[in-house]
Image (tube, rainbow, N blue to C red; front, side):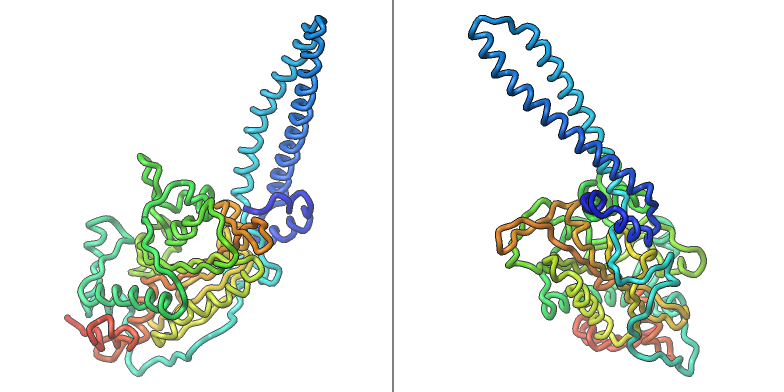
Length: 426
């Protein structure tokens, strides 16, 4: 949630910044108007309460002297009624203000490119060069069939489209990837592993920005008012909701493996094929709680930590800086890491690394006590480290051999009992 002071004191600059994200000035003016009404009501009720306190003393004094206090008491009854009326109005105004603020995205960092969609993103780095081999590369569905590692029809039978089943050496590879990533983050990058719940309450979803705006993209258990998590970012970031941390403990770096659940259907055509866009998938997430002075520097570090996953697997990838119109709702600055899928002939996003400044922390009431004893909002960051389905696609296509086998990257072999290749079973 943005700081309401931005709308009070820097309205024009804030409106100009958020216009880069397609936010209409009228929405911001609406929030500002609610705030002005709220502050006017608070001022009025404080004045009336002071008047009532002073009158109470005066009434007591007059009564002690035997004077008539009936008129004064009637006046104070009217004051009390108005205070009660203001309290009701104030509750409604504060609710409306919060609801409006919750629908406003984060203010983009000044240096990010302006644009409406992914066409304005900037490629800041490409790692490795891809050369097509002298044999036709099978796409992940075809090679997966030869390897016997996917069963899409039975996934449809069990649940529906977008819920694939991974079998045999494919399931073993998936488990190896998860363990490899967690070990990398914890043993070499200073993360603490967490195994959080996969179901959260509405307050948690609101804290990280999924609610209320993106409710239709989420799976909701209405009986208990619980939500299946779309990313481990939700439970891990909410771990410190309503907490006050110590500045000396920052940055705090947490990582978690979870399944993720998303109702979004995705784009039509090839992007819904096979493992390219699914409703349930595995992902390893990285979450940072940092000092505000270091958050954008920490974002650059976070990107390299996600990169290390791809480098260790010998994959060809690139990094994009996202434009204002393509960033996630809560992000102030974001990078995407994309893998090349040679059979699909397209880049596949496997990680988004974002700095949220104090946007999530304000929703979460996540604070820290600075060295001077002042309590301030933390800054939060998160990055996928990384998502499994498209990682699997790129690995199967980039490391494919002419005989239909797939070479297992050396970094994964210790987790696969030394196995060097996925071999065809058909």
